[in-house]
Image: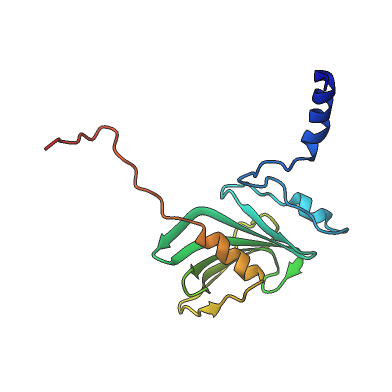
Length: 170
């Protein structure tokens, strides 16, 4: 087979191959017509938000920033953006600090902030703190399970090794 024919076949087939996996999505995927509001959401921000799921009226994000893992329990931030204003507030964004028990498949809310505008914009957000942990079972096949899997994928950070430290040989 001539090389030019092989080259043409290669160039034709390469675009059909799946793209390599990307660590983070930088635009929020929209689902359905009428979701133009989703294009205005900021993904990166100060917290490196990762898109989790888009619904017609709300979008869910989570971040690995400031996450903490102790044994099987992961504490992380989650964010919800709404198309239309909600109560209490009114608010268009929620920032939630949650604990996820990877072994028991449960979730408990630690605290929530309600923001008047999308993209967590508000000079004085309303705050709610859960003083008592109310653990809820995460049901299979739900958004909660997707968030649990995200949380459980977070591993403890390895301590940095001091490059100036010397090791003594016995």
